[in-house]
Image (cartoon, rainbow, N blue to C red; front, side):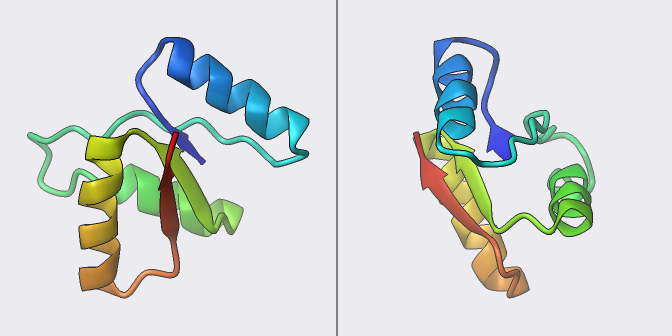
Length: 79
């Protein structure tokens, strides 16, 4: 899963994943005003059986804290 804002980092992550032979699934950034900002991400990860999320440093920190609290089998890495 790629969780990045539009721009050069997204393009680099997208094509880097393709070159690595990974299945790339872009997901919109969480809406902080939402009751459950990570709901779309979790649903996408579960339905696609994804194990890894590529994102920026700020989002990775938030995701790792959330995944640890929820005991989700997802890992996020920084681009």
